[in-house]
Amino acid sequence: MTLFIVCALFLLLAIGVPVAFALGLVGLGAVAFFGGTSFTQLAQSQFANLDSFVLLAIPFFVLAGNIMVKGHLATYLYGFMRALTRPITGGPAVGAVLASAIFGAMSGSSAAAAAALGRVTIPELDRLGFPRSFSSGIMAAGGTLSILIPPSIVFVIYGAIAKVSVAELFTAGILPGIFLATLIGLVAFALCLRNGWSRAERFSATEILQTGIKALPALVMPGIVLGGIYGGIFTPTEAAAVSAIYGLIAGLLIYRSMSLADLPALFVDSARMTATILIILAGAIFIGMLSTLAGIPQAIVGAVEALNLSAWQFLLIINILLLILGCFLDGITILTVIMPMLLPSLRLLEIDLIHFAIILCINIEIASITPPVGMNLFVIGSISRTPLETIVRGVVPFILTLTFALLLITYLPALFLLG
Image (tube, rainbow, N blue to C red; front, side, top):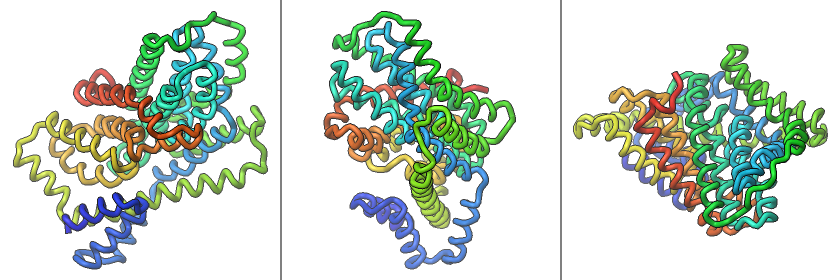
């Protein structure tokens, strides 16, 4: 059964079968040919695992992200960051990275961040003379910060799978998220300095004040959501609902960039995206249960014991494996399929599951900008009509930057994890 699950799954994914259908077909085939359990038991297991208060945060965070895209909050946010970074060489690019980090603290969705900010920043960077490869690459990389900076949909799903506190995961993501945003900003600055892109401009307090007032409703949102969680006012799931409500208030009443007529389509799009995530998660639960019956997690534990691997050696192997898989699988598939198989080995080696969540998130960030299937590459290509090869050229320095950060955070966790 093990060989069938692994080979069939990768074959279906390789020929382009949608992830949810690939997971379901492999699961159904495994039960039909090998038995080991019943379809009724599998259905009950899927329902029980999806019937989770924690997972209720997903539709709200998806809705909040779509509201921010539709409400053009990214426009005001980038305007303020652009004003702040005028005195810096490459200020428009550095400002785009800062805007990506703050947008990440509002949406929790990498694709939403890349789409919302890319529409605003790429035309502006083009106008200022930045090469399209650089502008598209930096926005693809900047969008990945939403995966790690709380609130993050990936953390919500990880918490449900690993049975760890989502609030603790959000706390753990703060310093690594700031560190990655700083690294991406420094690389952007270095590239601008070396190539002479966008000289420093005169500081303007008036512009900062004007753009800051316009961006204030957007800037307040992360404080409300995260402050409410860490202050014990509401749970992460409730925080997701608060973020969606606040986004509606900002879009409808403050910025007036949305109307009531926009809401039906917005809700339908959010429901469709949520359904996609949950169907993939249901399929992954299916495969996870069959993998356990087939003994895959136990086989991994046995290999760890037989090879006498230490924690650092195991993490090195897993990072290499995840970097390779990231070239062919999307982040949700990596999270939902691979993570359950690794849990027993992580516990055997006493690897902190909070620390591993950060490691996994950075791997998913890298996967989202790694060709040939990196999601953010296609998002940026779609909104800016930029050829994939152009985006890939621009994103390579940031892939290397994220890989460097991955190694540091893997082996020096005390420098980056709070608590």
